[in-house]
Image 1 (cartoon, helix red, strand yellow):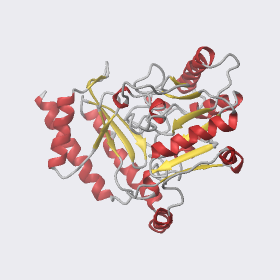
Image 2 (spheres, helix red, strand yellow):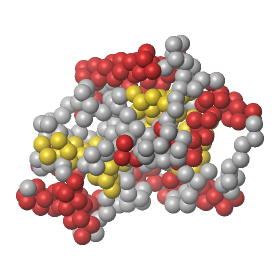
Image 3 (cartoon, one colour):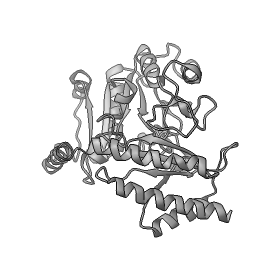
Length: 350
């Protein structure tokens, strides 16, 4: 396969064939692709066209502890927190309460949107939402959600297109940070280091369902892609890119998180390893998103300083940092300096 969209597309087929069920769940604010099939999984109006899509797909409330109604930033699995914010352990305090509340919202969808017997085919989840703005869930939520999905006969699918291959630093796969084992894992991007390549990994039992009919993939079994993928994996192992993501990523997070206390327009800094989000706001109390004009002013100024950063989130107010996994602490320091100078300049002009 050549894209994450195609990988998720195949995972949907497999889950429906294997379980014999039709309905699939994914999160609001999720991004799983832009093919006609996966556009239904994606729950971001900015990525949707007015065409028929999403038949049999239902979206559950996004367990966002920053912008959602429950939880605090101390609930999520994050190596650094803003000054003065206490970390909560799984199963304690507001973290436990947030998990319970978001699980009840999942049950609402099961109760009112699924068939009478509640049977379902699959639940798709990114371990950290990428396009949605580097959103992390309250600790323990994904474990509870996966368990409930399996009770309903569904498969658990982990979309590791952006979080996989050691980018989160702590583990090779993002789902490992949640203490879960999915039934299907989809991957792309990092697997080819820029070469168009994707894959679906699952058990032999689930994969065998595709033998019910002929299935063909134009790019499947491409020997050039296979050689590229093996070379990339070997290089990652030799150069220790996962450990570099942990070391440099944590260093970068520790620097960036200080901006939350220093600037009124920096609402939140979050992430793991080299997958980081900086949420910009007009007001920290209301969390009103920073205006597009101000966002672009910051983006332009960082670009002039020689640093390119991405944007994401539903409102386009989250700067997304997902640099190459070989960046150094010096690169991280330059990035923070460029972002801080741009933020300071724009804030003072508001």
